[in-house]
Each structure stands twice: as C-alpha cells, then as structure tokens.
Length: 388
Image (cartoon, rainbow, N blue to C red; front, side, top):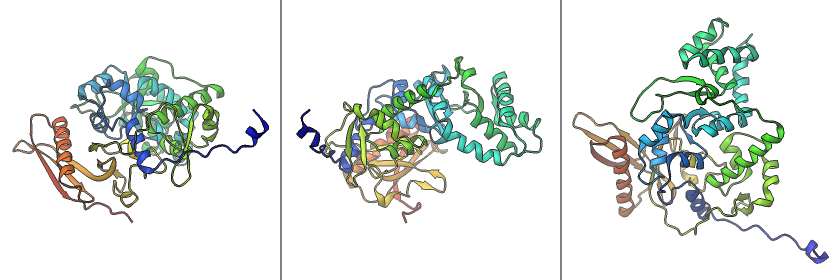
C-alpha cells in the first residue's frame, strides 16, 4: 500500500432506502415468495419463531412455506426435534433442539434481569437452593405450573407461588413439553429441562466459546433479518453491548447506512433484491418476528401505524400489503352454520386488486385454521388503538 493509498479516505458506505431494506428483509424472512423448504430448516433459518400462543408458529410458516402442512411442525415437536422454550427477549420461542440447547445459555443475561426482579419479591429464597430443587421436580416427570408451584411452596410456604415458579423458569432451561403446542390438540403447560427432554447435556461455555457462539448468532441474525444495525440485533435478542461482536466480524461483513445515517451490517452473499421487486400480500400471526426484531421498524411498519399492532399487551395478527403493515385480521371458529369467518381491518383503502389478493390469502388462512368449513372473508373498518 502506498502513502497516497493510506491517506485516501475510506469510501462512504452505500445508502439503503427504506424500500430496499424492506425487500431485503422480506427476502430473508421468506416473505417475497413462498419457499419449498422443510419446516425444520425454516425454523432454524429464522432462528426460531415467537410462540407466546400455540398457533402463531404454524401461521408464520404457512405465510412463508409452499405447501406447508401444520402436521409437519407438530410431528417435529412430538419427535423432540423442535420445542418451545424461553430465549430471546425472555419470551417463548419455537426452536430446533440444537438452538434450544445453544441459545438458552447465550441469552441467560437477559433472563437474569427478570430473575433479579422476582428475587426481590421472594425474601429468604436462595436461588442456589431453588434451582436444584426445581430441577429434581421437573426431571422426575414433566410438571404443570401448579405442581411446580406446590412443590416449591413446601420449602418456602410464605412466598408468592407465581414468583417461585418464575424463578425456576429463569434459573433453569425449562421447556414446554407436548402435547402443548401440537396442532389441533390441547394441553396444559407442563415443564421439564432441556437436558431431560432431549437426552443431551446442557452446554456450559467458556468466555471464548461464548464469543464464538455470539459471533455465529450475529451471522445468523443478519441472514434472517439483515441488513441490520447493532441496536437492531440487541432489540431482537435482548442482549446489550454487542458492538464488539460486530467489530470482530467486520472484515467478513458489508457495511451500509440507512437514510438516517445509521450503520447497517450484512452478509456479502445475502439477498438484497431490487427495491421495485413486487411483494405479495401476506397475513401474519400475532407476535410475528418480522415486526419485533429491529430497533427501527420503519422498514416494515410505517410510522403512522406504529402503535396499531398492539392493544395493551396483546399483539394483533397483521396484514402486509406491498411489504408494509397495512391492517390487522382476526378469525372466528365455525359457528352452528359451519361457516368460519376471517375479518380484515385495513388502515387505508388498498384498492380493488389488493383487496382481491388479501381475500385470497384470507381463504388460504381459513383453509388452514378451519378445513372443511365454509369460508367467509369480511372487510371492516379499523377501530383499534390509533397512533399518537
């Protein structure tokens, strides 16, 4: 390198428009076209599916995969190849067995924040004593929350039973066992450890191994949600101080900027479609990761609609039109007349062609939720919480 080369300023990072970011993210999220991918591969590629309720992971895959059969994911849960466990943002996700084991200890610092809150509500409780007691209970056999609370109350009878159960969930990698979460079946929440469920040891990482796992997770996050900033990934997983990981990886990444000047990182070979690439209508479930995994959600959520996906602490199921949040939807089970209804509430008129496309997606969703029923798609006015 010559002296003149060293003194030459580095080229400015290319700017990605909001629409370019939108199309890139939709491509990573398998939402530009339905993909012929096995459900297990999709769950791994997406680094899990948010799963506060039982149906959203199935609906999320139905929006993304060509010919998706809910029984495929249900079968993976029964065979213990995927499971439901608290991980990113200290929320429940459906993850592959490998990711349940690997990511749970990685995000333990996030879960520890919740643990400290509940320790303050539990005077006299020593987590070093509670954790092995809870492990013994749930590894003897999967326990319901009621059974876990009752077992812990025998040792700490004067404490809040819900706080005790929450402490156990924070201290241990507890997952929800089947039949909870299976398609078309019901079951109360029962818990055991990942070690007991998968028959594999729970990993313990050295600092160097933690750094290596974090670097690998950054790359996977960018593959599923990029291009993205450091703050974006921190919003997705709940961890903080991730800048060093991105700096370690910088030689392997491309750098961009958004129109506000925020630095964005991306994988060199990841898809970044032309911003004029058509984006089909999609109906997404509540808590879909697409809407929850960036600090700046404007690539998918127009600012004027930013508060319209939530009511108190409940997430609405959402409608994407041209790749952007455009409305919400809700489905009703078949009534006595055998008719299942899906109602779409748009934030603004989408035009006749888009309404036809929305109706087609709604019928597809009803066929998944209520096979064999008559299907009724309705359009209504949005009356939810308005943006401030």
